[in-house]
Image (tube, rainbow, N blue to C red; front, side, top):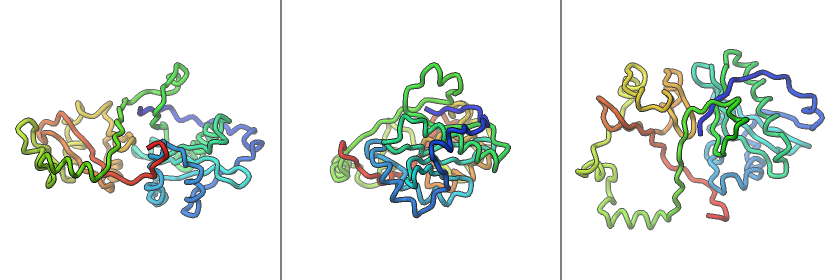
Amino acid sequence: MKIDTSLTMPQLPEALSQAGLQFAVATEEDFDEIMAMSQDIYGGLDYLPTRYTSWLQETNRTVILARKQGKVIALESVCVIDDGETMLVEGLRVAPQERGKGVAGVLLRFCSELVKSKYPEVKVTRLTRDDQLGPKDFQKYRIITKQGILLVRFRAEDLKLRLSELGLGGDIQSSFSNSPSNPPLVRLDHTAIHRLYLTTDLMQGVLPNATIIQDWQPFKPLPSNMAILLKKDIDWMVDDVSNPTVASLCTFPFKVPIGDDW
């Protein structure tokens, strides 16, 4: 579920210092400690191990750690998008023994203060949640869109065998495109992407709330955001380049540590 909320600038509570929390920008040397804290995240399907290093290299992103007695107990990543007007929150996690103590809220407020000091034009915070929102949440959040996620587990060898039996062992995309029941998909090049998303209104009826959703991240269709998205390894697909009704940003698979329940 993609949501946003007006970015407020409250003073950090005095209880912050009393709680003994320290905040610091994350570095590559913190990786092992962060992973140890994150062992049960997403049931072993955590994306952070494959994203952490690249996150640290993004100039518009800051990864903040909260420490208690010298140990990492929480992490949050903040990325400034939408021509500098939006703070995108990702990767929030709190060590199991510190959950339910308000650490996440304090860390979010600290990050908001930090981003506002560096980017005073930021007006909105956007984030993704996978839990059920209650009445109090809707007092501060506005839903952009909802998204269903289907998790499927299979052995790569079994998939290859089944595809081969179906005659799809070669070029899978070409096999599907040539099927009479499936219209050919169009992979967009950079020129077509800019034309469809930035210079025409053709995508207005396709994008949810005029928002590009890519890998749980909501972006407005702006040139500055396109510069971010086009650096990623994405296949931009539509069903019809002249009058699209379906669009997909295809992200390639990445490895995750598999937990005990998988």
